[in-house]
Amino acid sequence: MHRSLVLGCGAYLPERVVTNEELAKTVDTSDEWIVKRTGIRQRHIAADGELTSQLAVNAAQDALTRAGVEASDIDLVIVATSTPDNTFPATATRVQAALGVRQGAAFDVQAVCAGFIYALSVADNMIRLGQATTALVIGAEVFSRILDWEDRGTCILFGDGAGAMVIRGVENGGDNAAPGILSTHIYSDGRYYDMLYVDGGPGSTGTAGFLRMEGKEVFRHAVSRMAEAIETALEHNNLTLPDINWLVPHQANIRIIESIGRRLRLSRDNVVVTVDQQANTSAATIPLALTQAQNDGRLASGDLIALSALGGGFSWGSALLRW
Ligand code: UT7
Image (cartoon, rainbow, N blue to C red; front, side, top):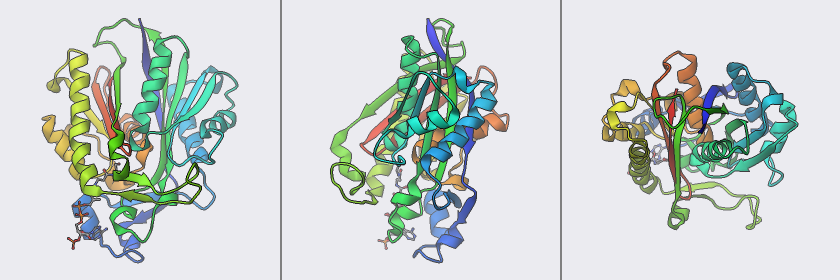
């Protein structure tokens, strides 16, 4: 049976760091409020003219190096993003060309903060079906460009960045102890469209837009849906909560992350947290956090890693990986 093996992860963060103190000079907020309510201390902001595709290429190159894979081996590039360079073509095609990938398919996936889980699910299923052999799955965003800097309830929450993962199909049976992606589960409930959206943007409305959010509603749904998606994944694989070695959740708010950790009965030491340093980079948070854990040597061979995210739509999901 085919399964996707994770060969390596990579990351890229724009050079400019904006601290809460710096933000408080132009936004009616304070470091104290932001840290207490969100856990965020700073975020990276892309330079003028620095595009999502460039962030994605940098993260992809890092992932390819980590994985020891050549661009010529890649036959699928998926970019999860809500901030594509242009309305079309897909940002992934630009990334494909810049990396020198000359075969297979390249396309974007749009599921906002759940985008990386969605993209991973599509890539994993294409590999399982034999439609692709080696995939680059990327989450890349410049949310700083769609923020209303006059809305203190949202502009303090987000940052820019990109993370990438290289996965390859292997024959290693259906054993849940063998390395690779054990499963992915994805869901949407469009009745919540208005809870988190951009009020315009490229597309059928024909207007520029900014991110709008009902923070409390998103918070409530994030905790229950992300935890549920992991519980479903465990059950699907005949595993239980104590089997989880690492939770790598979407990084939106430390209070959301801690609530999920408590519900899953995980120690704080088993939860990978980057929200303090990077804020919410939407589709990029999970591959950025995984890359950090990979690079600092926390992840051991055989560890069970649970990924989960929720974003606009609402769209949410989970993935279970055996490292
Ligand atoms: O990736 C998925 C997308 N996003 C999320 O998952 C975010 C989910 N939601 C959240 O993280 C939280 O709801 C927020 C951090 C956005 C807000 O926290 P909250 O505890 O729900 O605060 P609130 O919106 O109820 O605001 C409480 C107070 C209000 O003042 P009053 O009405 O009590 O006087 C706000 O005006 O805090 C005020 N406030 C601020 N004060 C200083 C809101 N934003 C700020 C701010 N600085 N930046």
